[in-house]
Image (cartoon, rainbow, N blue to C red; front, side, top):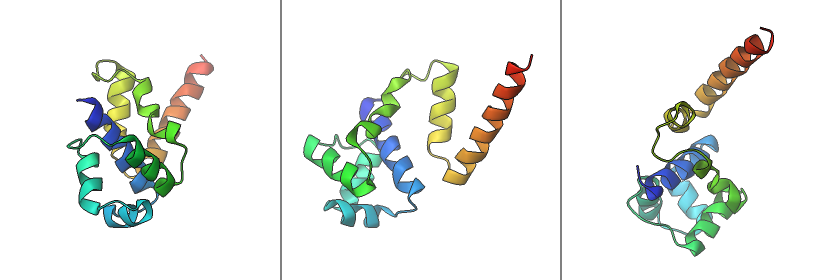
Length: 111
């Protein structure tokens, strides 16, 4: 997976968390919906100007868009595999998975 694909997944994840369509996000950002789709699929590299527009449209700090690069980008570690698997899931599903992880973490603390 290349850097554009990873970044695109991050945009898609935040968009879905807000229950926005690509068209709605495009309108908020002042970008074309086709462009949003291309960025989400990693087909286009977003310019700094577009990244700023995406950040504003998603109502999040620009830095949040780059948090996805704190893991190994080659998906070789278990944490990276979990992250990339969960990234495109619905927000409710992500919350359930987080609850499960928190429960496992509590069990491990009590051992």
